[in-house]
Length: 447
Ligand SMILES: NC(=O)c1ccc[n+]([C@@H]2O[C@H](COP(=O)([O-])OP(=O)(O)OC[C@H]3O[C@@H](n4cnc5c(N)ncnc54)[C@H](O)[C@@H]3O)[C@@H](O)[C@H]2O)c1
Figure 1 (cartoon, rainbow, N blue to C red):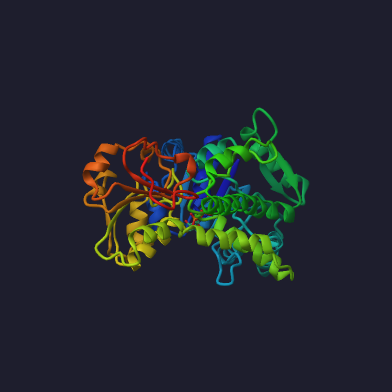
Figure 2 (spheres, protein in one colour):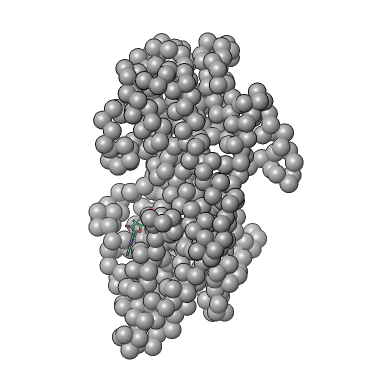
């Protein structure tokens, strides 16, 4: 099939690469000229395991193309995906200006029947809005061109996006037209080889499904973080509690690790947008707003432990920081706990020696750009010299078994604050480190 993907970010680029990998002819459109130029020259703007080789291969095969002009993608396209950003607006709702901007442009430029797919995460009712905007433009042009709007929310996880797209748990398709369902099913059939993973429903329910999935996962995280904080106060071990409750098949082990709170491009804004959707209908979503509140506080738990240990004034203190990305496997720093922790410590006079395997460029050029107290190093051990403590913030594999002798030799004090998920527990075994974690060890321990 001939496909066009509008918006070549995490979702658009991964979708485009995977669809082309399955034999479709795909054109990815983006308004960011540098991004498109880079992609044409084989430079991949984001880090995502397996993505670079897939993009390069399909560009070489001439089944994946990039352009800044929507028209280039509309000549042959049967299906157009809208995969632009839906950032948080000032009032907490999803900002639909990019989605509706693309809809308008489609109405202005489409020449042949189209299926228009909302892949961006959009509030319930957006499908209707997209339809109205396209129709209005067609009416202005006095053109009668058949089109159908479909909702096909994306569930990929950054850090495993290619794998998730190629082997999805489910593919949700919301539509109100049989031909649209048929075409979408045909497009996705290569991804559901051994059993059918396509779930069809109406458009509004498909839009809602995405928000509910993210809100449920965010709720699990905040719930477990709150439990971790209570465990710490009553001197129970949250890790043992986790294993104890996970064994109940109604609860399960996944997504119940306490940590420094959720970040990234999706959970924070989607939880907020769901709250706003409810509020607009006169309903106060008490549980969902608490999920967000717990998360905001959780991002500062590790900073608070540092302050408790070293005092309010951190002037002259240097902290080595391993991990800037909001999770491993990505260079994405949107809403990462590291941003909040760095700001909190620097505000009190600290210097930060930072290292991340993938996200340092993001930090330098955007998220921590104005903070001159942050120095960046090319390896994790280089950050340690004269460090008063080490802060571990992202669950990158390379941080799991560090060389403790090296740590001991380089650091001023053998002190570690571990803000990662509990499964990343360091095995310190009588090495004389003070080790602080989420949910336990408020006081120094000497193992
Ligand atoms: N990132 C994720 O893990 C993820 C997962 C599932 C769903 N989503 C949702 O998918 C959507 C996209 O997210 P993302 O992370 O890929 O965003 P992103 O910011 O990485 O990419 C969006 C891209 O759209 C481009 N763009 C904006 N307006 C455009 C226009 N008019 N024409 C062409 N291109 C335009 C931007 O330049 C940018 O490159 C969001 O709604 C998000 O919530 C994201």
